[in-house]
Amino acid sequence: MKQLLIPFLLLFSLAGCNLSGPLSPAQLERKNYQEVVGSQLDSRPQPDQYAMYPNGQRGINEHIAKTTRYPRQAMADNIQGKVLVEFIVEKDGSLSHIRILESVSPELDAEALRVIGSLDRFHPGFKDGEPVRILYKQPINFKLR
Image (tube, rainbow, N blue to C red):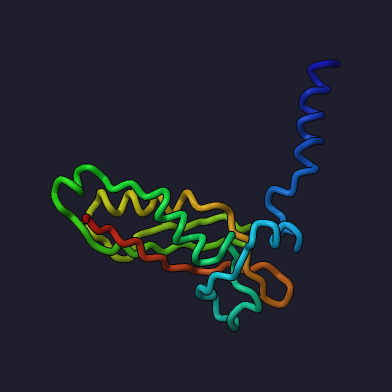
């Protein structure tokens, strides 16, 4: 009986967590979610609301600045430049199809992919009250001082 109770309690406690559903207005306000303009993926008109991220584009830029680690080999080889990363914010706010559009070097590209992949979950974009997928392009500048 005890063996059945533990999975049931775990399932019951997870059911109360809204892991993939839309955030409430209070949750959005508390974390200061702001729209980040991207591109609609299909032929429909632009969304009514783009995907949102804590502190908007500024929050994304702060995350990049805080989490980016210059690869040692790229530093030793004095490699610098702008890596352009493309990704999709899915209907549940998760990221998918993260890929390099403009490459600098394998080391810097890999770091850019890691940093974008570590972004917090977005609040999805909406069109006509339904969540939609949104395409984003994010530059990451690597510069040695």
